[in-house]
Length: 157
Image (cartoon, rainbow, N blue to C red; front, side, top):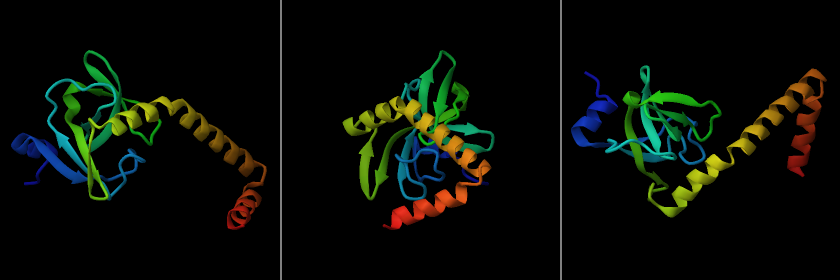
């Protein structure tokens, strides 16, 4: 029998694991940072990081909106917004460890990061869209190899 996050949370009330995936970068780095997840004691709030189940997968993403029966959630390094029902949420991030140093989500620096990173989302999304459009246009015009060579030379200088 395999152990699920739900069973560990039910048994211990918390779980600690190393993150997998890049959807929460730059805050959580894949296979490097440890996260501490606890059973939620109340409904989540905006900027909380929820652990929820999506089919057979577990996902750890930030709450960006709260409604009476679901959450709007997005990874810090993603652009798609998901609607997640209350019933799918099994845990909430309470802390993480980076380079051996523990950080609580109650720390002022963390709270500032969460608000700032969410606040600059339109700029990040706009930059990503413009970059993709520029690459697509350069590819269509046959300029992409030239631009890559130019950037390599500029980066080496």
